[in-house]
Image (tube, rainbow, N blue to C red; front, side, top):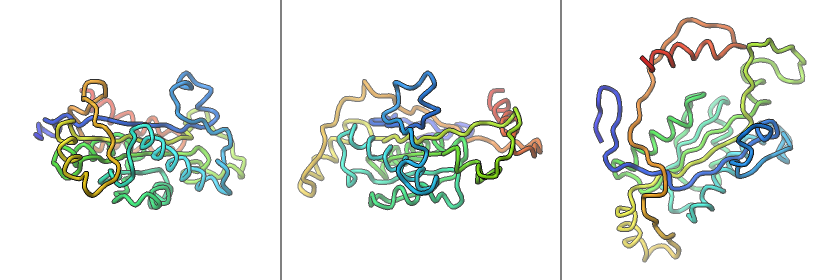
Length: 237
């Protein structure tokens, strides 16, 4: 791995070997409907609070990703997960039943990208064979966190964004040869190991660049797009 003026270049090209997504009712009305692994039409997801619903969405996304990749929980070395709530409470409770070493991350809209970068670093460095990363948000929890609880009935201005209700999860894995070597060495300790497929059919992470804080003192909590736009412009120049 090389650091090229703040851009991390991954020599072994860690790959995304499995992924999953869980989305809400409104998201299912959009053009990505057919790409979601599960659609949840109940905003409570069978729970008694919106926060618990968000936890269940992430737990489900991670579980589906592992199933699609034919992986056991014991085969994941680290988990990098985050959400929009105080103390990353949704992801903390979502991951507590997996028994995977957990690193809570908070990057707001960049949480998934940050998780992918950190997972790729662990794989590239040899500290992990497989790491999972996940992010979640819920419209109802975000409104209560950043603006007004829905029960308050406040009017939203035209500039207010609509926070996604959903969760995504990815498994980042080392190259196939390294994975095969470790699978062979671990076979005596584990009853199940999945087949390691060639690297050609899955996307990989070639490089990552952490963002730079750019603050133009935008204070309108209903216009987060204006707050984030300067950083996007700066990164593009």
